Amino acid sequence: MWRSPVSAHGWGPWGRRFKSCHPDIFSTFVIMRKFAYLILSIILLISCQDSGPVESENPNIILITLDGVRWQEVFNGIDTNLLNNKKFTKNASMLENMFLSEDNDIRQEKLVPFLGTFISNNGILIGNKNEGSNIKLTNDQLFSYPGYNEILTGSPDSSITSNDKIYNKNKTILELLNMDKNYSGKVAAFASWDVFPFIINDKRSGIPVSAGYSNLEDQKLSQLESFIDKYQTMIPIFRYNVRFDLFTHILSMEHIKKRKPKVVYISYDQTDSFSHDGNYDDYILSLHNTDKMMQELWDYLQNNSYYKDNTYVFITTDHGRGDGDFPNSMWTSHGISVEGCEDIWLGILGPNLNKGIIEGDFYANQIAPSIAKITGINIGEEYIENAIEIH
Image 1 (cartoon, rainbow, N blue to C red):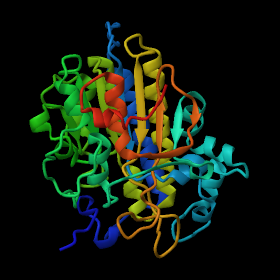
Image 2: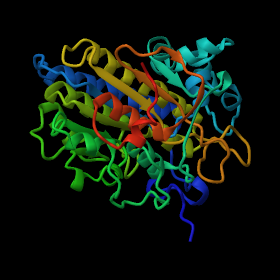
Image 3: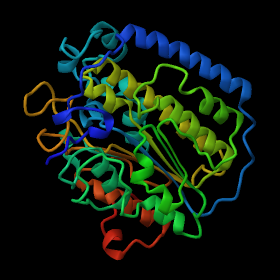
Image 4: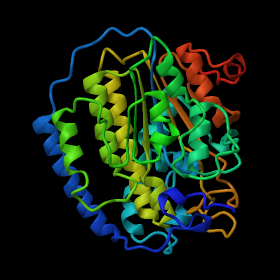
């Protein structure tokens, strides 16, 4: 029997979420603004001094995924057709004031100044179909678990046909790095979606995974980590199995600052959840806020001697979405029956890279081999030959 491709997120068949109570955009904005002020105040009060520089020779890797973010917004900014569609957008005037421009490049810069504009000028950006740059999934399921498996292992797995919490039999690039003497014990993962301990197979790999409403329990927590661990469920729950991306971001930043890991995987989720709700307002605002989080992380890396000039950052998505408000290609959905959601995108930052948008055809299964080639770990010659030429 065919399974709903997004069952672990609580959505119904064909990727459509069951109707639920959802706060309007103004209430959500006010609540999140107040909550952000509270978190910032706590950070200022209890965040400890950053530890001193540590010698680092082998390159560091930061892999980031944004769940279900379309290539259209990454390269073109806000979608004017969806902006003006009252079925999906409740407060068009606010989004217009924040993100709209007649110039495509300005729209992109307003919405995703780091992911779109900064990376295209300072690193590699792949996936702008309008400029002959394509990157696609090779798995035929086109939803989260199969997508993350392909990104993390460098190979699709036809046996993965659901988002169920089943331990991944495949070894991810994170696990292979953790097995290497230069990276062992220096790998960690932070994810908003609680299925990631199974995708990464934390039991077999030995990689600490903070996912959903969990923390790194085997670590001695800092004051800030303890604060989030204690109070993260004392506000309205975003989804029963998805924590706020802001928590994921703060926990990953704190871990990087305090423990200086060499490999970190960060997975944000809110963009996908809002999309399945048909809420273009919050999808756009969430994408914009996640862009700010990634900018904050990059700025820290460039101002820390342990990471500066020796760190590669890969940013991508597990799947695309439909093209708009079309029966066979709804932007709210993804999966086998939705046209266009095989198209994804990839951004790369690091020392001595080629720069700009790279034309040609690329695939998600090339990401893990590219990381393996940079770090020098052995994953098989056939995989290394599949790496993207980034220098």
